[in-house]
Image 1 (cartoon, rainbow, N blue to C red):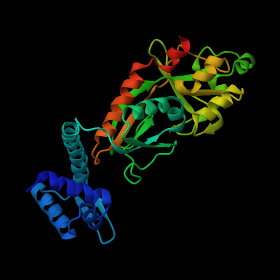
Image 2: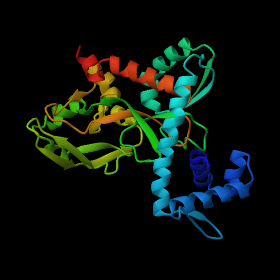
Image 3: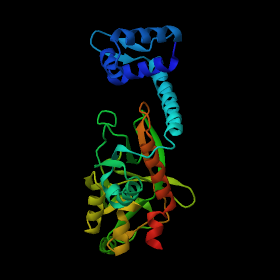
Image 4: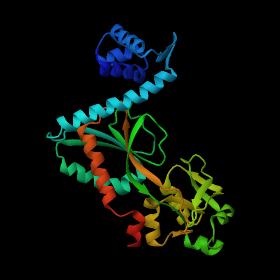
Length: 305
């Protein structure tokens, strides 16, 4: 009896959605897969899969076992790979999904430096703001910004990013410069569509008091660069990551307002599926990104230097 193989078999059935597809992925007979699942459930004394003639789904116990087993196998495979791959040169193809604006502005030179260090490695980079299906589309990992909603992914934080509230200087000349966040409620808001409540901007004062302001949404978009450009044109006020507004601030096209208040910071993560072996090349890129981003000053500090 191999408990790790039983776990792998169970994870494959869940990920593939059927015993037949799991058997094909593992190159074994469907009857062998069914037998392993039944033996696993018998050993645990719990039903893991709810089966009907049309579909199969996880029971509550099955979901708990899936989450723990996926993490355990991922850690085991990563530990084995770290030892066995330690002396091997990185080779093959590394597929990475990258957010468009941040990727072009800040990750492109980091990827270039990584590729230059590993000449036998080919990199396939997808620059897009869409949420790719890492498993279904065959990506090794993705770089994602903000709150992570997919609990099936393992996340490694790369760095934190400060949010900043900005508007064009001529807009502020016309409307005045606000003394507190509540004044923003009367202004046209340029809001990021990826937020759960794009019209609610939360903040914290210097003395730790928290609050929120409801914006009058004049424009919404799923691209921060677009909203930053709209703010530069005087269409309203935007709350954006520092790496997006840094250029406009440095050139004087934007002005930071309410700098004494702290707006919810976001983080940048490298993510990969729990059930996928983290290859040596993916692990090396994650380490490279963490060092490159943590060793550099934050974007707002660079602007002020």
